[in-house]
Amino acid sequence: MELYPATLLARWILGWFIWRPFKVIKLQKPRSMPSISVIIPARNEAKNIAKVLTSLTTQTYKNFETLVVDDHSQDGTKDIAENLNFRVLQSEALPLDWTGKSFALWQGVKATNSDLLLFLDADCHLAPNLIESLLAEYEKTQGIVSLQPYHKTQKAYENLSAVFNLIGALGAKLGKDQGQAFGPCLMISREDYLTIGTHEAVKEQVLEDRALGQSAIAHSLKVRALAGGELISFRMYPDGVKALSQGFTKNMAQGSVGLGFWPFVLLFAWFSGLAAAAWELPFAFLAWPFTGQAPSLYQYVLTIGFGLQFYIMTWRLGNFGWAIFWYPLQVAFFLIIFFTSVFKTANGKVVWKGREIASNK
Image (cartoon, rainbow, N blue to C red; front, top):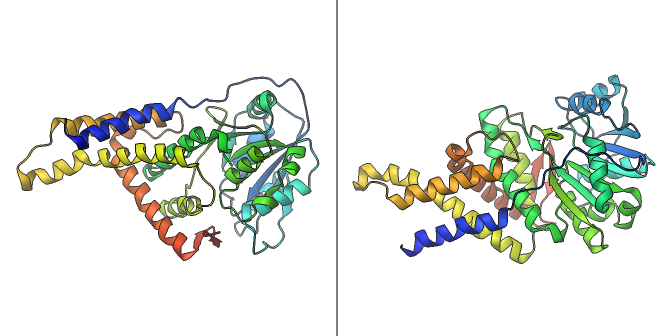
């Protein structure tokens, strides 16, 4: 075997070592019934807020309060929440040195007084047993327990997010000792939240979830990240490719919080193999009419082999369909967003929901 195909094969094998099936939260009952404050930051979430609030009304666990922090929405988010009889806190003006989500969550914590805090994104949908199952999981280790919701796609372009979901999950798995956490659904006690410095300690971070997790690790707290499975799901960026592109550019542009050196090297080594193998076979077919050389066996094996691996890795994270047929386009889109993020980071600003966010802190 030639050197180049051998390196791709080695990176394919590496993928199985760094993947390890992601643990999915299970239905379970908690041993205690502490009070919980569910805090939902919401900026222009009129299309989502009713779904998450309605799913909260069906929870089997009852000892919780819900607070929606309206972050200066312009689409009726506040009215929808209030019409559903939920308490809404109007956010104060955003200070220059804060990101919007962190500031909203920090205000929400100050306006509540329950024992536990549950930070929940406005685009999530909860199964009736979510809170009690999450609480039972929290009781095992305490610290921070977070869930990555199952990504339910409806339109073809939404499948472009598969690589981002997978990279995030692999990063959380590889960086578990560095506090990798998922922000859409995150539980922590009020006491521990105060101990790690609250959101004020990470107020400039776009990836506030990872920053909180790292702060927790620094204070000797456990941090656990699991897949949401059937208990929590979301539909990311349903408003089109532009919103999807801006959302992932915003997340990737923040370089100050991330993996340690060796986890990053392992993830980069595997992904570089995925990116190369994805287009081995398509490029061979495109070149065939001009070179007269048919695709080789190793090109079939590598492209299809990485495609099957990609499919197996992503099936627990979302309904991305037959990812093996999509993944060369998904990889290409990821690389476009990555280099766009690098450019915007160099310029110091990314845009999300009508706000410029500093990306070079």
